[in-house]
Amino acid sequence: MASHLFSPIDLNALRLDNRIVVAPMCQYSARRGNMTDWHVMHLGQYAVSGAGLVFIEATAVEAAGRITPNCVGLYSDENEAAMARVLRFLRDYGNSRIGIQLAHAGRKASTHRPWRGGGSLSAAEGAWETWSASDLPFDDSWHQPQALDDEGLARVKAAFVQATERALRLGIDVVELHVAHGYLLHQFLSPLSNRRGDAYGGSLEGRMRFPLEVFEAVRAVWPGERPLGVRLSASDWVAGGWDLEGSIAFVAALQERGCDFVDVSSGGLSPAQQIPVGPGYQVALGAEIRRATQAKVMTVGLITDPRQA
Image (cartoon, rainbow, N blue to C red; front, side):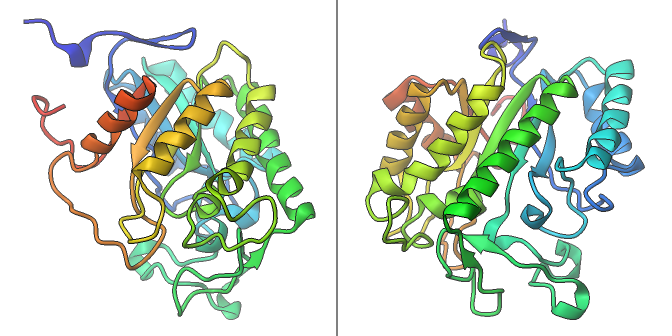
C-alpha cells in the first residue's frame, strides 16, 4: 500500500521527496554564535537519513536574541562563514533539503544552557540586556526586559532581514520564522506578554502587527519562489492567553502576505501553562488550522511511531 508519508509535496517551487521533516533542535553548542564540529555531526546524520527536509536549529538574528551564549546565530560574517562550512558537508554527503529557523528569544534570552538549569544569567556570568513587547519578565526570577521602542522595533526587523539575506547567500532552501515557544514574536502575539498601549498592542490586530511586519520584510528579500513559513504556538495553554482562534486569524493574515506553510506547536510563553501532553498532542491544533485556512501544515510533538506519522 502506498504511504502518504513517503509521497512528495511541493512547498512553493520546492519539491520535497517525502513529508518527513527534521524539526529545528537547539544544541547549545555554538561559540560566539558560530557553528562547530558538533553541528557537522548533528545535522550530518539527518542530512543522510533520507528525510525530505532538515531544519537548522533556532538561529538568532542578533546577538541579544540568543537564548544562551552557546546558541547559533546568523548576524555576522563569522557566523555566516561557520555555517557555510557545515552546509558544504551536508551538501557533499547528504540528500535532504536544508531549512533554517530564524529567531529572536526576546525576554527568554540571556539564560544558562538547559543542563545548567536554564535560568537567567547573572551579570558575573555575562548576562546581556533583553527585549520584549512589554517590560514583563518571563517569571519572577528572570531578567526584566525592556519594551522595544520604535528604534528597537526597526533594529529587530532589520536583523531578521539581514539574516535572511545571509541565508540566501548560503543557498538555504527554506526559511521558517520562529513565532512560537514564548520567544520574541510570540511575545507580541500573546495578551499575557504584550501590554502595549500603542499600535503594536491591545487588539488582536495590534498584537499581530509586528510579527506580520517582520514577515513582510523577510518575504520582500527572500525569493518569491522559495518557501517561507512560520512556526507558531497555537495555544499558550493558559486562560486568557494566545489561543487557537487567534492562531487561525494570524495564519490567514500570513497567507495574504505570501506564507507557504505553517509549523504548528504550542506553549512556551508562560510557566503557568497546563499542556495536555500525550502522543500527537498538537496534531488536532494543526488540523483545525488547516481546516479553517487550507494552509499547508506541519506539526510536531510526540509523533514517535511511523504508523502514527
